[in-house]
Length: 577
Image 1 (cartoon, rainbow, N blue to C red):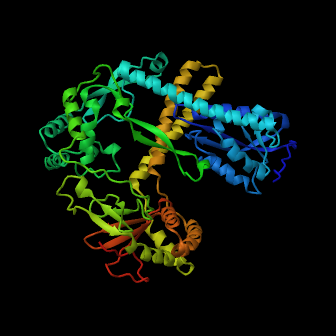
Image 2 (image 1 turned 60 degrees about the vertical axis):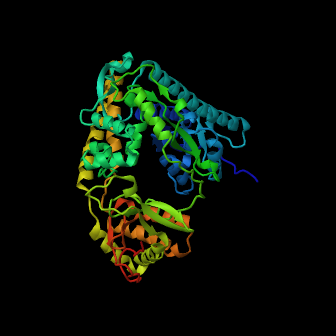
Image 3 (image 1 turned 180 degrees about the vertical axis):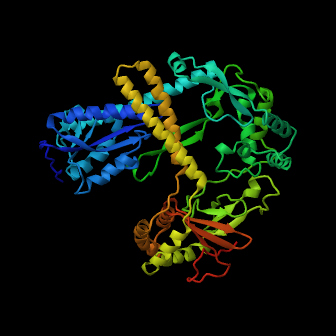
């Protein structure tokens, strides 16, 4: 097969799109990184007289992600296929920032196919797809990028292990329940101390440390984990998620769970030692059938032999090491024999993460039984009983009782002849979240203030200001800006859609909904996710309430009584328990 030829002769006034990337995992300054990368790109294209007319710069995206999973890089790839794109070529400033491992080999064929030259400073211009030296250079840079990332990871892990073992330093993260953070003085690194960075450590939380002691005492006297959760809930002691609501918005906080008690009993930091490396990040293939999609990162538990303990206690212990060891022996050797479950085949749950129990507000988990998919809520089996929730031991709803009517309703609601009615309903039901709006407005103001400060620092630096002082200001302001931006990203403010946006969306969804009857389970799951279908199962009423939240725009449809499965019902679906 012949490879398409690229015209590598630079015409006059060539228009370039700039591609770059920066990760903030190691506290890089995104603006500074963008500036030096685009400066190198401009120097590369300067002899041609070309100009950069578009930017595709990814922030907070690791280089290990392939281009298709970086938002701006993926947008650039889509734009390559657009014959009316506003640029003639693409230039990058640093190949090790943009390409990782074999990403160049998986990406450059698209540039060749759409006949868009890719300019790189290291080859002095456009990459020639027929030049083996160019291909070798880019392959080497991909390998160097992967090696650099691996070396950084190994150095960081070795440094953190030494800090935990020798210094007993607190290495970040939220403090365990029962402890709070206290200031331990300036950072030992002079530059970081000059920037105002300080060390922190753990100290007993006066409102919760005694609960931890009580849990260990009850467990060592023979009380079971669920019994402990029952006692603490009955005594109106707030569970960890209720104790600190600011960091646990996603949890109900109604009662103590077995998992919370077990986590406390297994946490070695209650002995006064700093313990690091209990978990590690591992990269697993996103799709074993398509390795070009890259990896996803998961947290896994390490074996206890791999934990790194501080040589000596570094904060006030809540239990002795001997008592903690006794608790671990009891956890590892329960009184009754527990049979190991055989690993079951992987099943696709079409409504995974989309069904909520109306009794407790928790998402129902998928469960495969007798060749059928069910969704169950085991709140009463995991959480202590509370007067606020009257919950059966288990609540089940069968998927097959929901999907047929749900599919018929979606096909009818999004059909062309119902479009005006559906749009009117959606416009009438749109609502905003005052709390989210207020939080996002404040965060946006902080981002704007930070941008103004950073621009002022750059002006001061250009005017001859002290570089070290300005660098400290820049790092602090950049961190404040990142915190505010995280608030914006987390809240995802809900802005009402106008009629034009709704008509465009429904025109696209209409065809998808009509195809549901013949779609496989994976396709249905993806469609429900994209249009934001959520369901709430009310066991006492035997009904399912359906809500559609396209692009974070709420719309509650309503519910129908059990047995009313008529297609004309503008409602959710009925179910059997």
